[in-house]
Length: 110
Length: 115
Image (tube, rainbow over all chains, first blue to last red; front, side, top):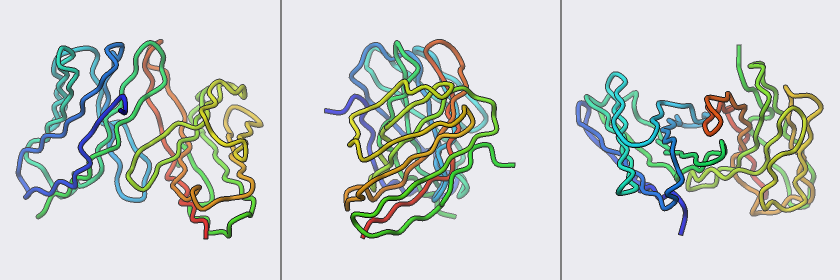
């Protein structure tokens, strides 16, 4: 069993929809939770990160962490075709080295 | 002005050949990585260097040999290429956010196809 599990999708939604992307993890030592976005034929880039449990909002994006359930989510409001990408969750614990999920491929249809 | 640049972008080669991928970062970071991304988009760390010193060496065949001539460069040489080496290889540099967190800046990747 991998330390971080992520539904690979693909996920296809109409423009304007609310998107929910999720990861579960098994290592209770994880403290920082990140979301990277990867466009086709590009490297991943950091979208946002949170520390411990709680919510963090950045524009149309909200990251949510529930440490008691070992479950994290990324919500995208008013999704746009430009949001079409693969979203990877990543986490760190006692060391800085990131552990990645396998990514969810999202397509937002115009 | 690309922050992390890696070359070549595409590499198509025959089994048994030796090839190299070069990476350079102009962000002034001390730590650089090589990651391998398989066809299912899973990113797996291969190596990490801090200021030219190897600090992480995951379970990678010894056909893979990283080299860091200075902290801005991290190259990857692969000997005797095998079909299973086909993947996208990403170089990344790291901005330290805290003792237990970092932000990675990735290159655009090198798509390696072994025939």
